[in-house]
Image (tube, rainbow, N blue to C red; front, side, top):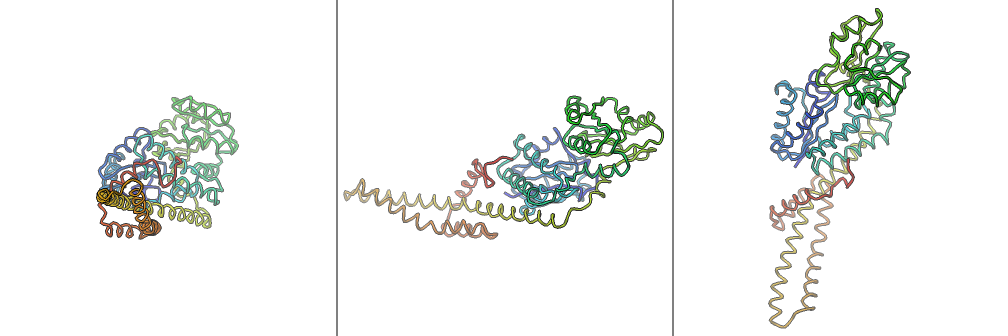
Length: 443
């Protein structure tokens, strides 16, 4: 079994493709189950954010796994395969693991080092666990990714500026004069909206208003900043009262349309500027609103070109952590792969010893040897076999952690004529056991 990732991100796809590919809510749960039911795939989790949609899977066969995931991404996004393929990237085995560690560390984010991705990876693993599509292998990998991401932030200054898409967007909005001392409307009440509320509150707005389809969620968010709640059914009125509108819902279609904005403009003072910051994927705000008089629109396309770059030294420090964690994980995985061979060898040796001791006991019984004497002889034979096997089995475990470690395990299977079915049975038992390479802690 090997790790596979098939995905697309802000680095490989235009916003128009990313917003069609984005999945959330019940649709994400359905995608997880469909991927898990695909031939050649044993387990899976999916990271779906405003910047990326990535399917991670444990697969039996590379080509079968890639074909199955690509077909499902095309079906769920409605993007024809030939069009989607140009935006996809595929990583396999070592490269797939390294990619996930880089993602969780913030190296692959639009805003390098941003904090949100770590929580998004954690949420992806949690959802897959709840949906029953996460097995031992990817659970271990997920733990590794979370640990690596935490180390990157604790041991380097990659996130010292506290940058996020929200903060970058607000910097652009502030350049238009539409933040400090002005009214801010936030549409939506999810995690991104919560970050927006907290970031806006530190920037000195005249007022903060929350609009959400579920009023109770909007009220909870507003209470933390002494904000107000607007009726979602009458967005034009709420927009008319604001200078900056930040929209970040999880809606599948447009939330703020051209007719609604025109209606809002009619209720505003002439030439009073209005800025929209659209952080949703798929987008919340109709792109055409940017053509209305006095209206500015900052969306993902704008942010993509304005995110800036992180300090090269900090990026290098994070990459070193990623390489270190990957090396430890790789050694542990390679060592674990030889364990079934060692177990099978010892099981074969025990079977041979038991058979020979039974035959010896039968012959010696005819000569009157029994009881304590037979037990002493049996213990002696078992000790001799254990000592003979100790050095090669310990050594093969040590060698297994090297890049060519599997060759030593293969040699052991050939030299001792081990039944492949026995090794496979031990491997299955190992996979089904509650222990793990990454330890007992949960994501």
